[in-house]
Image 1: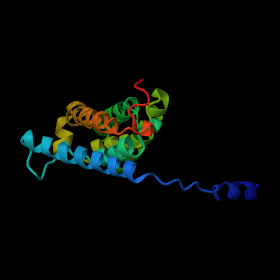
Image 2: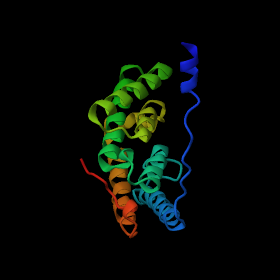
Image 3: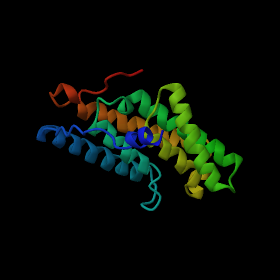
Image 4: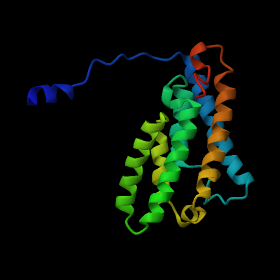
Length: 183
């Protein structure tokens, strides 16, 4: 009984496929422009350099998926939007229910976010980070309440997806075309 269990942990042989220099270049350029543009957007809206409300760390991970593996299911617009919005809603709700129990609220938020993303077929791993931020974030985030879902989350997600659509479709490589599906 133990041997089969332990054997599962060995994994399988990894297929180490390398991407072409052209694909690596487009991934890097797209990611750079997206994050830099999001930073500039944040400043345009008048937030101080200390706040950077629209530059949420989980969007860095979303950018990696959208540009690094644009054909992956988890990188598709439905998943990116749904994963972030669902998780943000859950994070805010859980924080409102138990603001003094951050450790429990954090674990519950990520767990419920994953379950909700499964149920809605919108799994986007960085979304769990957005939900977690709604719990462990600063007072500025907590003061936004459910507005956090619309700004900065929805606004930034739409911004990142728009840039992803533009840059991933510039390349003639059919594996870079984005999206693979909308819904």
